[in-house]
Image 1 (cartoon, rainbow over the protein chains, first blue to last red):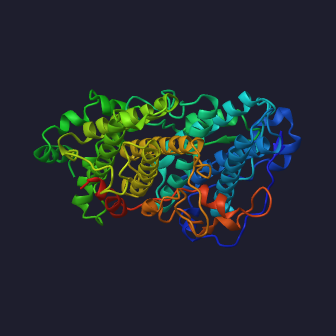
Image 2 (cartoon, rainbow over the protein chains, first blue to last red):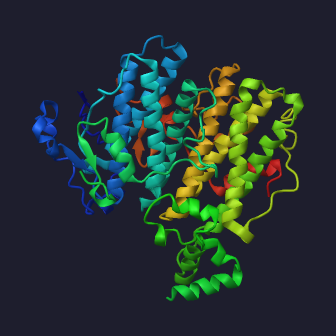
Image 3 (tube, one colour):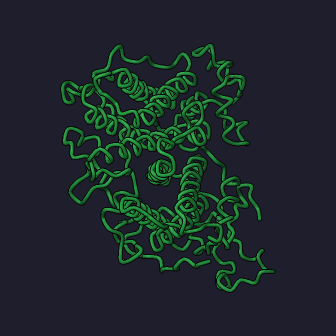
Length: 229
Length: 279
């Protein structure tokens, strides 16, 4: 278990103006039990839940939560590479780390005071020394991220945010295709993710978060989108 | 406003409307599988278009126009891979064939999917395409590396084209979700084609679009500069990504460029594909 570094939100160069429109919609998230995250009482798990909120802020926090998870994962992968990693793999997995960290920091900056707190991850299911374990987890995260953005797009009310989500999801899909080909050449868009109409997966929030929560000590809920904890 | 009047109005211009919204139609059935609360949202795009007209809202691009625009691009991509698959002179390595066949199948599926949704409103494919783009790529079907370069430009451009249309589908669960689901598949293709090119010696080519402060087109092929115009943008929603913290220090300009793909407008894309015979 590790705690993501709660860097202070960068205040320079940010446009929070447009967020103010949504600020009233209500995110009460981020206030819960984070101080106890590192010394968690096992009998008190229920207090360690953060809700994404509602409106566009809720969707952006949803994306922020997923990007936190992905960033923490690749930071670990880059810091402690699996056995026999090639230089090409190392270079591109480090690129992906940098992309995911940029995504995480972007959402944090854009959300400002509306951002949920830093999440505590739980990677006990992953063997970071083992290539198969790492790549299969990467594949799961990337495919999940693509399906999550695809599924949440219609909930976004602001055209600017929708475009931003679109700018990120295609990068996640590029990651997914790369990771999948590392595992099995040619599987970059196989029938496990693309249907017979040539469409990628589109997953609702209530379906994405239970999977993400398997890798989080801080559980993420979406009470306004049919996923309560 | 009476909903059934709307239906009958639509039927005046689209006799197959009832059939189109019937869940028995395979494509619609597929669409409704996207989510559970589709009863209202799955109502066809024609309705939202009509509502826009009825309420005199500021004219955005009509949903059918977006879909036909997408269809034109899918026709182009499908024809490209279909012709490439039968171009013996390309000598496509057997290891790469599965990659390209996957993309080919998807582009043909996208064509069929969009045609099915559009029904009688669907535009036709061009009688013929010019994949040399008026002589810019004379060896497109005889030199495999040229073929891959064109494939990459088409895929990256396709990603940008879909992305640019998302705001025109704002809030439309059915159509936006389908468009996003195609958009990310095109991005998977683009990544895969880039990986093939990388393995064949284009070692600076990454699965994602890279660049620098002065380079938006990371392909090294100046003929496709327009396809990559603006890809080196680092300002996202008012946030300068290079000022954000990274694992150490602040985000590099490379990471800032790579971590966000950029959209193209419909006018930009139309101009880019015109030399291929798309009108």
